[in-house]
Image 1 (cartoon, rainbow, N blue to C red):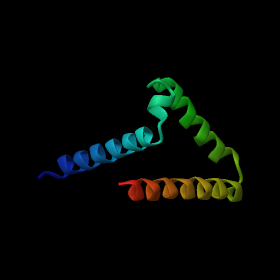
Image 2: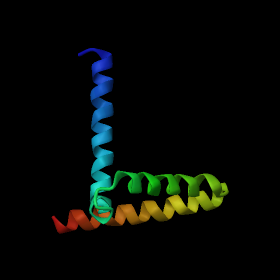
Image 3: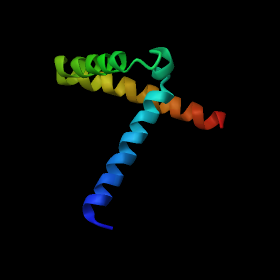
Image 4: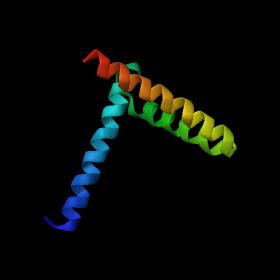
Length: 79
């Protein structure tokens, strides 16, 4: 397989996985699949991370990571 095809396939898989996270978080249903609303929310998150100092940004990411890991664990236990 050519390098560009492999890279494209990896990128596509990555984007599909990110879309799965959006679905898993319930954002599709909560926003009635309004992509402008979801993009606005993502831009707000990015703004929060950019506007904060490094410590606050790290704390925020740590809190979000813990919540995400907890959700993954709960989903795994549910299955």
